[in-house]
Image (cartoon, rainbow, N blue to C red; front, top):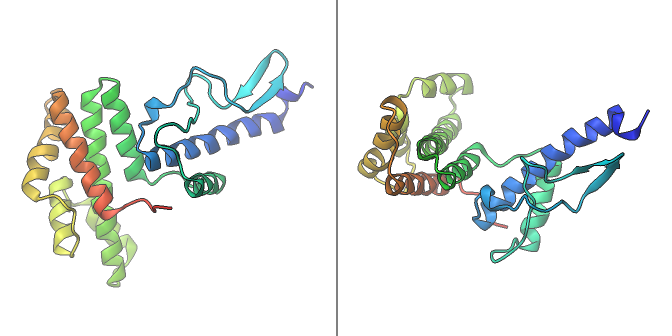
Length: 216
């Protein structure tokens, strides 16, 4: 049996792509570059010969990491490698921000606004859950309660009642993110590029205020 037909090779392929994806996410979040800006036109530096083909780190759906104008620091790169090796992907709220940016760059403004709103909701809900758990409530009760909270605006209100500081007012959130998201989801409307940018900025403000990435 050829090496590339073996179970070990298949396992390596699956594990490597998952590891590399996690590394990409952490790198993108720290240097502020959207995943879509990672170049996939060149081969990866990692190759495993398999007959006439190669296992590479950057096939069509993957991207190669390049350190350019906003380089990762040595410590950031080390931490990104550690996170990836532990199977620790970027927190959901930060992944959704990256997804929103990618969607806007690709012209899918509806998806960009929806992903941005999801990022804000996750950050707000996480703050609320952590605060209530610290007060002694059971996590199962907290999860059930949050599940019944309707929308990002109500989560914002609950967050502020618990002492959170989302760094954006309820009015701005309603007008610039929640309403635009609802029209996109329920009305099938495509937001303007300006509306999309504002929605992403509002979401990023909330995420950075409540669930910032560790700066290394």
